[in-house]
Length: 494
Image 1: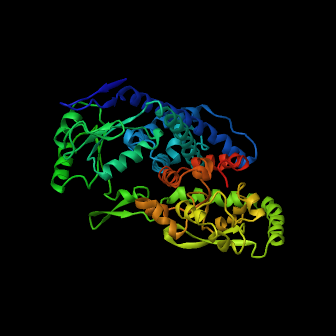
Image 2: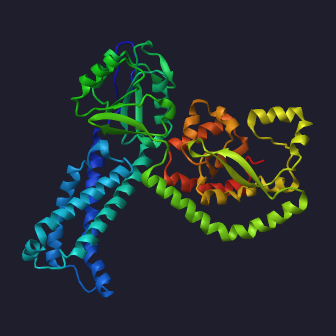
């Protein structure tokens, strides 16, 4: 159900009523956790029996069932204390799974604290509280609950495209940073963010800042909008307000339990890299992440690169050997071309490709001033006189890029990422150029499956930024999958 809020002479914002969906979500999570915890505790005895004896010898006993009856509610209480049913903490990626692991660890510590003697005397089962049982139960509860929450997360993300489980957000400040934040949040409909509009002291009420997003009033009207209900979060671009007004606004709403106040870093140009807040001698300071991916995300992405690259190497060897021979026979020059490109942190490296051009290609191109101009604008030519016959066969199928598997194994590139660019191309990315060097360039990416050379340079830039902003390992797997038909159908390739 949608409700509307409005102040005098302002358009009515679209407020999504999430009261019922919030309750359904929390109840669903509790039920899923109950089911997964029960499964985990039921699986522990037979798994331990298999480990010890090679077969299932220990049936589920009545004492064990009774213990499960008490342990599962205890785990739910622990989860609640860890904020795992607080809407603010849900679907926070690895942080949520880390909280699940910590909560399950506390639960096992609780059992160990009371010791096996006490529980065994009550339930008459040494198996229940053996050290191996504790370890197996800890692993199973953490894993099963994580799987359950992952499943719920995927379902919720799919439903968010239809307006379910949304978070109503008001942005305080419609300056350039505020607009950049709104555009980034709206870029992914599965994020569940419903931006109702802006408040701003410099723009007139009713002014359209972005498509369908209006100024709802001045900063003095924030309390009216919040008190009328339905707003979950205030996002405040720190560059939009003077310090005194910013402090006054935070003090006014810091006591609202139903309202979350979020401050941007003030550096909208590096929105995609992320920041961390650290306390040094009690002083909270913001540190800027030098790379976009850290921790588990970085580890999983690297594992995908290495595993897939090593798996395809035997097949690639059968392909690259005849290609190398043909290149050598067709025209003089090296088999591989080293292209100097920009990597993570702005460090340059040589990206390997099969040579697809004549060694006197530049002289051939100078005879075509019209093509020189096209190359300066797009950094790519549709009818390039420098390309050899073999190159015209390799390029549409992206076979010339196969040697970049070496760059992937060396850690300079990734299988999936933004387009690799030269130092001269960085200016084309404008204010977003800082974001580009926070991730490894990819052999394939969104640009590869979205039209390749048919796209304008501006479209390619936006696709790269979308990938960096919204990265998930599932996006990588999806791009990798769709690259195959994109290459074989030669969509937009030249």
